[in-house]
Each structure stands twice: as structure tokens, then as C-alpha cells.
Amino acid sequence: MVETPAPPRPGIVRAGLLSMAGLVALGLTRLLHGAMVSRATDQRTYGLVGTLIAITTIGSLLLPAGVASAASKFIPFEQGRGDAAAARGVHRLLVRIGWAGAVPISLGAAFGAAAVFDLGWVDTFQVAALCCAFSAYSVQKSVLYGFGLVPAYTRLELACSGLALAATVLVVLAGWTVYLLPLAAGYTLFTLGAWWRVRPLTKGPKERFTATREITIFVALACIGTLCSQGFLQGTQLLANHFASRQEVAYFAAAVTLIAPAYFLPRALGIVLFPSMARAHGAGDMADVRRQADISTRGLLVVLAPLFAVALLIAPEILTVFGGSEYADGAPVLRLMLAATYLAVVAVPSVNALSSGAHVRVPVLSAVAGLIAGLAVVAALGGPLGATGVGLGYLCGTAVTAGGPVVTAWRLHRMSWLAPVGLAAGFVTLILVAASVADPWLSTGARLASAAFALIIGVLLLRGQIRTLRDASVGGRLKVAGGSPTRWGRRV
Image (cartoon, rainbow, N blue to C red; front, side, top):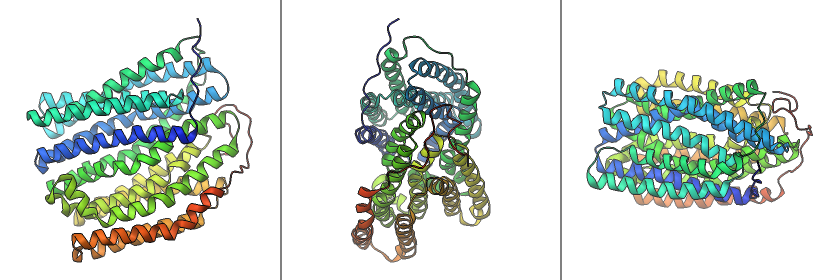
């Protein structure tokens, strides 16, 4: 059988821009879907819709998310070693595992949601369909990146996002209540398109992958880490159902939807960096891993700090535009979620640098510790503070989850991050405190003026760090021959 040659891979910058375009489409789909549903329903209904979406997302984290991470790592790793047959064998194994887990998990999520929220059969079907479709979408997206098909991902994401939005408009205008089905339809179409695009590359001899134990351990660790970090984010809506009022549950649903765009840049970097770093590990190029982690972290720290400062100051206006004036009181919740998101996104390159090599346990253990710390804070403050207590718990937990990988990568690769971390994180913290304290006395005009002033100050404060990006260190201290992904260098 004739093998189909692998397509040329775009460079990191072009791949990042293509990924950014796709993720903007993905995030805007969720954002506009949420805005349309929130304006077409009352807060109680929108809170339930947001909770059901959170349940489907958590369900997809139980196994498919780990399989997706493994596809992003092991497929390009084998390609980096020049073993195309092994890469195809890994693909076949992971896709089978993904489907074997997606169906029962989706059914469990649907029946569990039906039991807790007393759903009818139509809503139960919606939950199962969205969970299964999103699980398959997650795996197939990572397969596309594993094989270097970034342009194909972007085209599929743009097309399917447009169809999902069109379906949402139809549902809202028709007065139907199947609010989850448009998203499920979009993810299903993406899955089918990705499967068709990858088919030519998976034809040919497939080497039986013997290191199944290695993949199994990685998938398990990735599932635990992802569930503890991203699952905690989605779980805030479930915790709000217990500790907060129905109105505050809607605030959390809105906040989780609104912070999605904040992940555009880091996720675009992450889904490009992870297979790129895995490929570099496979080739034994540790200097390239260090360079990518250094420049990406500096960029996220200094570029996002002024933008997050603006969002913190105008949180009430953002919520008003999203769902109407009745959502403006959720500004304290949104601010806490934004601060936590900033910590999470700047840690993305460090997580990728560690997880694509031998130190996957560091992000996982940090995520577990962050979940435990966050839940402890929620248990202590959720009762007296309600939604604010849940938000504080998520912020504290995220600080632990993000801090472990950043500190480890900082030490392991001897990064020079003291100045950018101190300036950027300190600036965001100052704005968070100032916005929270002064908010009751500020009018809309005053908040907008303060946001413009903060943007200017932030750019001026960090301009030196922006220039430093041009001179970021490119030296690495390890050079290990490509081999098993668990045998690179000293473990942490």
C-alpha cells in the first residue's frame, strides 16, 4: 500500500495565527450562543443551560481530554523520530480508546443530569449528544494538530462554528428550547470533517505500539490534571448551585462564558506548542523547548496584563452588554474569574514544556493540589459569601495549579522571569483590588476612563519587557537523544 506523504507543517508563528483564527471562531460561537440564549430566556433558565453545558464539558474531561492530550504528544513524537508507521499505530489506538470512553461517559452525564435537575427526555438527549460530540471533537482536533494539519483545523473550525451559530439563531427565533443541539451539531460536523481529512495520512502500514502502558499512564495523568483544572472551572457553576442563589448561578454561567475569549491566545499557542515541543523532545532538541517556553511565557505575561486590567475595570459594562442590566451585579464574580484566568493562561507554556517531556506529573500534582485548596476555600467561604466565596475559591485554587508548573519550569530551565512576573502580575493584582474597592462609587463613564488610563499605564510600565522579547534567551542546557518520552533528562 502506498503511503500518503505528510503535508508540510506551517511554522510556529503561522500555525499560531491559524490556530488563533480557529479558536476565535470557537470562543465566539460559545460567547454568542450564550448571549442569544441569555437574552431569549430568564436567568433561571440560562443558569440551567450553563450548568448543563458545564456537565457535558466535565464529562469530556474524564477520558477524552486525556486521549486528546496523548494524541497531541505521541503522534508528533513518533514523527519527530521519523517513524510514520508508529505514528499511525498511536493514532489508531487512541481513537479507539476515545470512542470506547465517550459513549458511556456521555450516557452517564445525561442520566446523572436528568436525575439531579429533573430533565425531560429531550433535554436528557441534548446532554448526551453534546457530551459525546464534544468528546469526539476534542480527540479529532488533537489528531489534526498531531499530524500537523493546522490549516485544515482552522477551515473546519470556521465552517462548523458558523453552522452552529446559524442553528442557534434558528432555535431562538423559532422559540424552541433545544439550546444545546446547535453546539452538538457543530462539533459532530467537525468530527466527521476531521476524520475524512486525516484518512489519507492514516493509510499504510501501522506499527503495533508496544508502549501501551506508557500511553495509559500519560492518559490517566492528563485526565486527572485536566479534570482538576478545567473541571474546577466548569464545576464552579455546580458549586454555585449549592452555595449561591439562582441569580448568582446565572452570573457564574455568564462569567464562564465571558472568560472563554481570554483563552484564545494561550490556547492557540498551547495546541501549537505542545506537539511542537513533543516533536522537539523526540529529536532531542531541548534548547528549542526552552526557547519556546521562555518567549511564550514572557509574551503572555506582558501582552495580556493591560488587557485584563481593562476587563477588570469595566466588568459591569461587559456583563450588561452580554445579558442585560440585570447581570451587572455579577461584576465581583467576573473579576475574580478574570484574575484566576490570567494566572491560568500565563502558565500554559510551562505546562506544555513539562507535559511534552518527562515531567507530566508536575502539572498534574499541581492541579490536584489546586483543586483541594480551592475546594477548601469554597467550603469555608461559600456559605457566608455565596458566589463571591466560590469565586475566591477558584482564584486560590488556580494560583496553586498555575504556580507549580511555572516555578518548576522557571527552575528547571533557569529562566529569567523575575522582572516580567513581578511587573505584570503586580499590575493585574493592583487593578483587581482598586476595581473591587472603588466600584460602588464609579459611574460607567468613570470606569471607562479608568480603563483607558490603565491600558496606557500598563503599556508604558511593560514596554521594556516587550522590547526584551526580541532578546529572549534561546539557550538550553539539556541535549538528550530521542527515545521514550518518559526518559528525557532528570525528573522533577
